[in-house]
Image 1: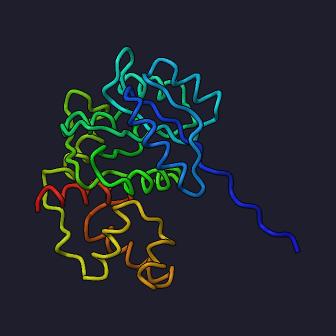
Image 2: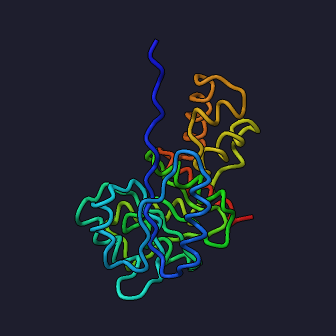
Image 3: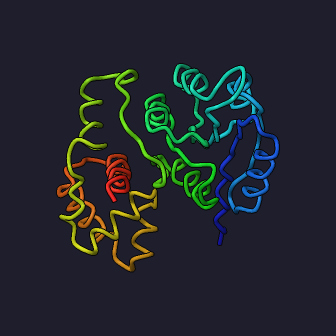
Length: 230
């Protein structure tokens, strides 16, 4: 009987101008099963080349760097269609700047001063195709950088121009919504709450209907708005 081989590790590149911080992040991730740091960069000048050379899956990206900052890197990656998914790892807390990074293509945003587990959760979630937005940060649409009127209108609805409607949820739906908004995969939610996949799908369908949303990304944004309203 053939044994299943372990999946390849998630390959992570780190772009940050603080050497001690990069070293700390690398030490943290090296202790995580299934994650491998394959590149470290002190600014954004060589990010594209390193991502191609190392075939990184995830880029942990600081926004405030010399020479080529994180915003420029995101613009470059969006133009090249790079395979690596970017997670902004930042000390910036300005809602407009954080929202701009999402508009430029960041798949996740994590506060540097937040829980180290947030970083690991974000990496795993974004690697599976999800978005991960730090619940301790505030986000808002930036009119200056909105690419499409329809998209910005929908984001305005999610981020502040209407109530979040979380009060419509049942206690169980509330538990499910919180876990999904934090980036947990459906399988993880079902296991944590000890419910079947079928039951979970029903809960998610009801949550989407009650919150007037259509995707897990919008659920994450709705969760951010709920944090702001507390």
